[in-house]
View (cartoon, rainbow, N blue to C red):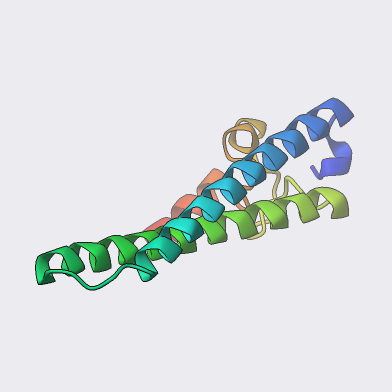
Length: 120
């Protein structure tokens, strides 16, 4: 099953969900970048305060990396929708269950392949 074999209304539903997820992530990344810039401009203070600021900056940087990865996954899913490869597991080439796609619209793998990947 590819995106061309889905009902057009379902394709639009999934596309809409991906665009909403994309917009929310872009807003979060922008806020994170603003917070990082604020922390980078922080004047040195007592060592305890600087340690807390450094810890917060490191946490925000990691969070930003995860969000950027999620954004890449959403962009790739939108590309798969356009190229009509959406809905096929990248590992076994079998259809991904509709319930999984509704829960995780950017899913690349069926549940069995995803579980195998996670347990390796």
